[in-house]
Length: 265
Image (tube, rainbow, N blue to C red; front, top):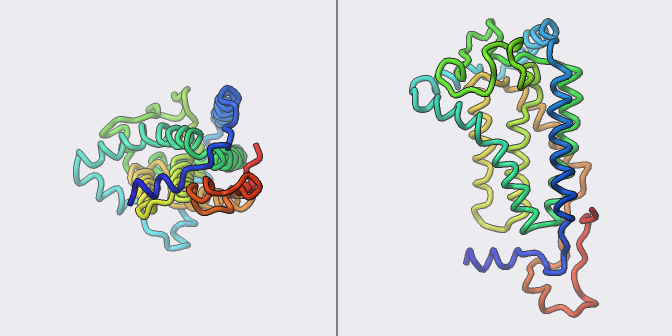
């Protein structure tokens, strides 16, 4: 049944993929622009810590659960906290790349849609990083949270923001990890028809617990990331087929073939 369902969701053979070289250059260029743009927000330590105090106070005013509860659960086990740090350091970027590659090969119209959504939400996040530099909770003494990456390892950041030349530690809001993880889950749920496809939501759920438990992000970082993604999904039209299965497509005459909507490149 699963194999039949997979066959039924294959896209019509006539659908053309965007040129591979162009897509590689486009995606790589967008990523480099984002990385370089994040570096422009470095050095604003006074503003970043002032904003961190505001975010911490806003969370308490909103009665959001304390990030410390998640970290306490992780630090009860050296293995758990090490796995969480490893997940934070190694999973989100390869998972997003694998997601885009799979869509490009198997669901080209959904690939174009997902690439547009990711580009839009990442650009919006870059603007927010520049306008609202934010120190993560691991750097804010008021939170009482550990920098689990430094204490237990592994970590992707330098020992201090000033000494870190590879990343901007004041770009906590919105969370890049969470918005990409949530988009991967939503994209796979939309592009597939398996009855178990909603299990992909475990990826953003685990990511949320990891980014909070390792004190790399506040709850509000994930909430803002979700809001930006929701806006991007509302703006970028979702491609869909008028025929429900590929089997139906093969039985139609050329004049009756389904039209792909919103699939323009």
